[in-house]
Length: 246
Image 1: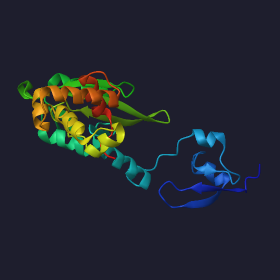
Image 2 (image 1 turned 45 degrees about the vertical axis):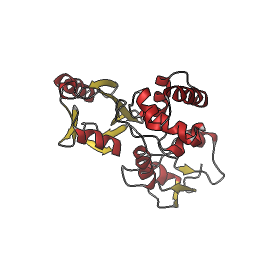
Image 3 (image 1 turned 60 degrees about the vertical axis):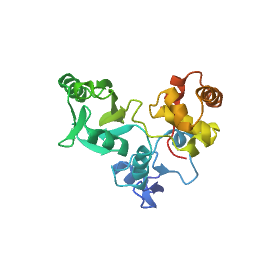
Image 4 (image 1 turned 90 degrees about the horizontal axis):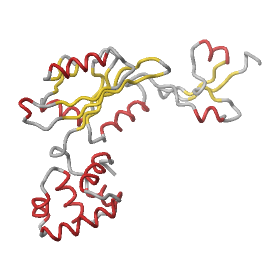
């Protein structure tokens, strides 16, 4: 094959499309998925993911981080040594409250010594995930659920992703627009659902919406049908895992 022939290379940092020789593409490490034949895409091209841009330096990376901001649970990205490189707004709010976990010298800090020991051990074993229960001081706050998951790129460790799930009672209400578009709920149904979602007891939620206990039961049954769930617990789980914006 002629080494002098050129190919188009897509610059992942937004520099457009440039033309390089095949020899140059091999020597500078350009990935096969970033180099496209002039004749069009191959099946292999479609299967391969784009070469990752430098952290924080490309529009693609910024879009990915902006997506994490939309999640209702805390998300942190750590480097291989455990230093926090990014946290979304939900994680920042949880850490600022200091209920059993906080940020100290750009690293996650836990109030419980056993949790700290397990977390530190996980950082030394980037091939394993870790689930943690994080209680607040004197168990005054319902425990957080924390998942530490290793990140990998091309067979090498690329740090960790930490997900923090806040227990019911501190959830932000789901926007009515989201509930209407996703599940077809009416405004009244959405108000009842959100009252339950933020931690109110059923009778209290009915009072918040301004309906009787029996009417609230009928409304909730309609919600179950629309959301395709069978219990209140399943409904709350669905809302917790679902999208927050429309």
